[in-house]
Image (cartoon, rainbow, N blue to C red; front, side, top):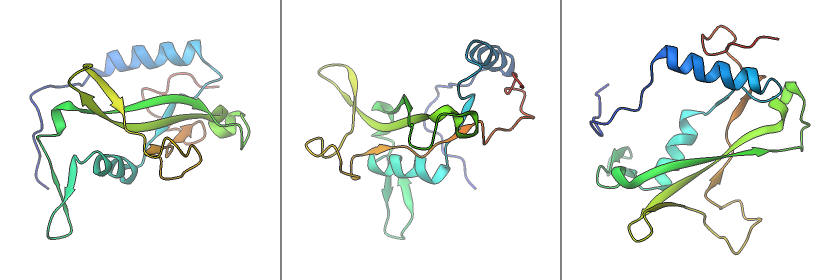
Length: 148
């Protein structure tokens, strides 16, 4: 597998920083999700929609580096009550994720939402493909600090 360099910018934090931040969230929000598992396939779908990943002639995908610097994915916190809001369902908490495009005029990343005239359309460009923790936690992770 080859590495694709997209930028010299790094967005990593140290393990100690991450532990501090996640511990604070979990201590202050014991009845909220601790994390969300986001399947890779679903992230790829968002990147394809944003035209960051573009189909090539062999059926694979290539990275469009020209689109990359002005793109982003936004996630909104949400609660879905359809399956209950207990701990076994991650308290109903969700991440609703949308791709964005940068607007040079307003200097804001604008959400990509298809069919805004039809709010019930499944072809919305809005994704909920996360699995909440709990119940899909890695309880042995150093970032999972509050154990009940």
